Length: 340
Image 1 (cartoon, rainbow, N blue to C red):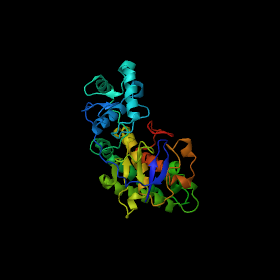
Image 2 (tube, helix red, strand yellow; image 1 turned 180 degrees about the vertical axis):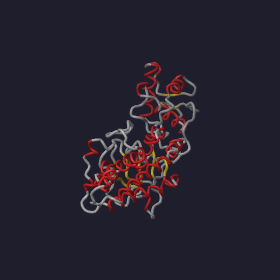
Image 3 (tube, helix red, strand yellow; image 1 turned 120 degrees about the vertical axis):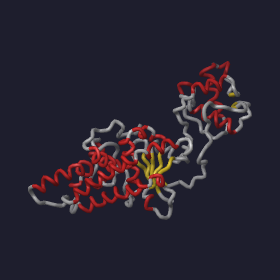
Image 4 (tube, rainbow, N blue to C red; image 1 turned 30 degrees about the vertical axis):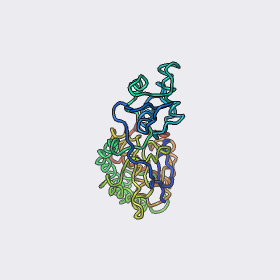
């Protein structure tokens, strides 16, 4: 069993066992349009599996202030005390105690109110489906050309620096060296390394180069979280640590979750997330990870020692963006504590 590197809700990463051999349903049936049931659901109801599933799904789309459950229900098609309790609370909110019987009947007032208040842009916490949520993956894939351009820009920057990084010649070369090393020193503190620095840059270059191999065929190395494996770990994405090089287990991929929705409309945000996960995915050194959070100017990022910068996923992502775009202000979508 391998390991996965996960981007956490607080911007950090955690290495956990890879549990991708799950037998969970990969493509759960989801109601489309209004919630429809064939038999009563809840207290004394027939509680047909599909009907219960649909009601649970609909209730989880209702905000708690409007009578929705908090925390959300586990959508399992089984009508237990929590589901009945959620029905009662919803009814009490809208109909008072007189209309609170803990049961939802087809075409009656509770079901009509439920359909009225459902937020169709809120997805209950059930596994993503490649069929119904494929737009999330497509939204990230549309930015692959931009992501490739960012990676190419990082490689070009490193390549130019490798020609001068270990030089001590004065004069014109000194000025050239300073300009070529500026961005690398800003993100990676390259000049703080002891001894020859060119081998360090070569490893960084090789990491970016390997990323291009993934970006050549992104459809083969990316997917959605169809097993909900990352439900309690990340809202954004996670990747199999070193999965690109693992010849014995080809199941590990870069996995996107619902948190990438905002990024699908912002090319640089998509690139930041994708390159972060690529750094995990193409890793050959097991110690790499996420040792600080956010943008290069954040205190935690500034405090990184050089031995950590070359292993830090956000450092690779931020460097590639500035190599492509030039000097950037701290993007509003980067958070040092959480991605939203």
